[in-house]
Image (tube, rainbow, N blue to C red; front, side, top):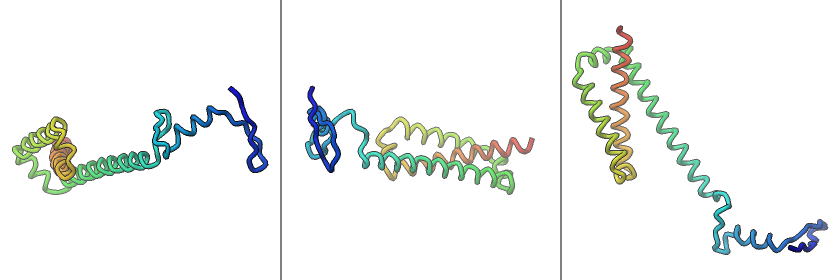
Amino acid sequence: LYFNTIKHNNKTSLHSPMNDDFEQLNDIESGRKNEYTSLSLNETNVRIGFIRKVYLIIIAQLAFTCMMCCLSVYTSFGAYQINTTWAYVLTVIFAFITMLLICCVPSLGRTVPINYILLTVFTFCEAYSVSMVVKLYTER
């Protein structure tokens, strides 16, 4: 290895031919990709957007579940839930079916309008089930 001294803007720096190879690997216009470089800005933005979307969906699910629990505890909706146990059984079955569809059928879980519909049905079923359990627990 040898180093050349390069003067640029009154600053002296060492230059190595290895640096040229490294710069060519990281050069976008060269068409060569380096597996050791970090993610590009575009991929990073996509990942951040994905994480943001996932957390917003989880927050919406938890908020809806909390709303259903409050509705069940503080209104007459809880009495309706206790008197209609068939609705509880039906929501548990629907939750299980939608969970299986999302997990076991990749085309349904990755198709944009269908996956949101299945996720909404699953969230409603789980919120109803949790709110009924909360109502039964608060009565005892």
